[in-house]
Image (cartoon, rainbow, N blue to C red; front, side, top):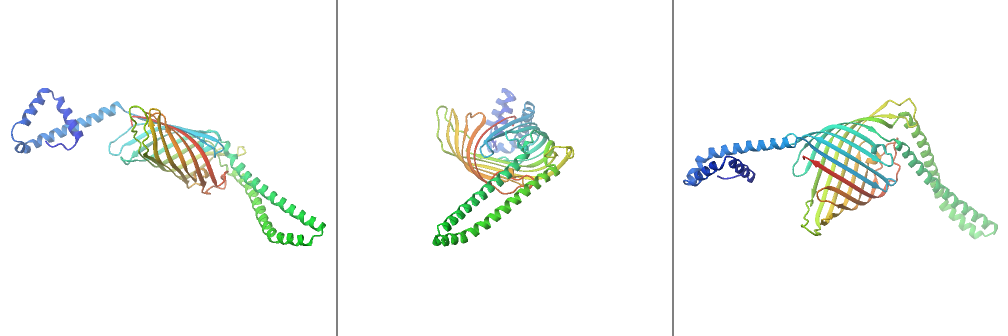
Length: 420
């Protein structure tokens, strides 16, 4: 009898063993008697019967496995220190519990909760969520999942509303300082001209006045433009403050969000090759790529920045399409009982259609990742990054930082799952 699969062979072997020792001996005797070529046509019904029995046994095994593991769960936590964000420490923790249905394209309905916190009180990093959703795995060789969720939540801290105006005022102050310095330079030049006149030095006067005529005019024009720009910034800031107060754009408490999107992950060089004892230096090609694209429809309560009762119960609604990608590419440097160490180059890319400045930037640089325990998905990463904001920002929530950035980031993450 020709076997088409090692798995089918094992199932048939187990099924045949369950029939008892006498039946096994009888089947062996039948198989040994007669010419194999002549007996092949007569053996086809028996093969079909055994295959059907094997399929039934496999289905029963899957049912038993589902009974033993009726639910799955996973927990993920991440914390990051960022020098660029004014030495901010932020992170989140997420817990999911669900049930798997189907085999070809597994469907996983689940319940979830997530809490975000940071030290700088950015409202998008300080909220707690509860929700329900479902996800479907579309591919097997790589992880590609489509999902949808309904989330209710609460903002925990709202002090970041003033940060943007502090950043705008800092820009104005820096430009005012530049303007004051230029005016001092002109003042010293005028003093030199005055002293030269007192000394009655016509040659020096002519040279100084010629220099003043060529350079001074250009600087005066620059100062005029700078002065006008600063005036516009001042007026924009004042009107912006009034607009934000009147439009009540500060989040205040409850939120409701509908989310749907795609999540992709693929890793290579992940399997450890550590010997039983000692360390190895494999310099194995290693990497992973994560990306998601999420549509969000969010409704949240808002309030005026200065308080008051007028807009206390106002509700703001908006939609947003957010793209995020984080590829890592490098080498596994060390593996051993004390963990593994990888050196890599990394990149982060954010983009959204709502023009939130914190979701519109790109960064890249070198990094090191240390995993202390092979049996746990616990990782510590240190990265030095260069990046740039795209300049996409909303007038009511301007970016408080400079366009270019350098950052030292230290990140710790942990994942654990059961039944998946």
